[in-house]
Length: 141
Image (cartoon, rainbow, N blue to C red; front, side, top):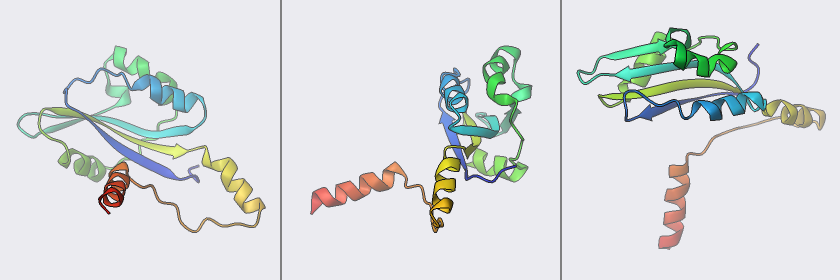
């Protein structure tokens, strides 16, 4: 059951054959119980603009082996529309990973808030670019 906040990220790689160097960090986040990965899709956008998506179980055996510890929980929630939107944001001759995760770290905080009679009114993630623009504006004043 998904009852904690979900987030997604589209990570672009300039090399159309990414190295997999981020996989250990993904595994660490899952093993420490910080997140639970709900869906992970690899994508490649060719020079002609065509896109190929690859689910984890479609990876070559060596690449798949890297994901096995987190792959057992993958649910496959991305729709074809989600994948098309993600692909439209990629340049030709690139690769990407589309990741959807559940923030497990929120569970304890949520319980503490409820136990204290509180209620979450709003939760927003602020992009680093917004903070940089804010800081630059302050510096110019």
